[in-house]
Image (cartoon, rainbow, N blue to C red; front, side, top):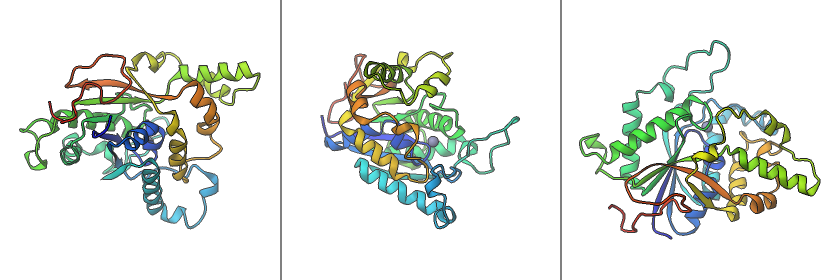
Length: 292
Ligand SMILES: [Zn+2]
């Protein structure tokens, strides 16, 4: 299928390369228009790669992250738009410190929604992806990303809302991207056991809190995209200040990932078209002529 438009809404630069990245690369490669929208500039992200924590990077981190994002988008083959909000940072400590003034999570929802509505009405995506109500992980910007995306999905279609932000547009479906699938790691572990080798993420898996169960129970849609895992990894490595190339993300070799779990997982959150679950295509049920 080709000729559709997909908008992936993310909180920070690098999120687009770790959540649903191979899916965006696949749809772009197959002739669809794919746009990543990044809500914040990632201003409060630390330098997480020791090799990049050097003068000349630290003192121009803002520009560096813009360059990294442009490179990641080029690798994935997607368009990219900055929304211009300011990273809220991940508050740590007990009690947690208040969020910094002016940060994205404190911008009134009405204001951030209008900005995203404008972007939606310009790009006119058939499908949007965002995070679930828990943000995928509990960063205030990720939770806000969910709230803004869901509000904009409704408001973009409503001629009464934000009439100065463009012609109304009905996004047909919105999905949550689910990256933290416990079953996936368990299957990798089984493969290592079969090979008689030590699973490099065994510690990680042991620490995984299981009270909420596996998000796999919420997954409605699996996109086969193993051929695009190399692009995903290259895009992630393009965020060199944020990603330790020796980190757990790269611990399981691609050939094992491609063999054991060659998909990315999504949950259909809202739809304006009829579709049947489970799906293997984000555009299932949508006609190529777009609206209705
Ligand atoms: Zn993030």
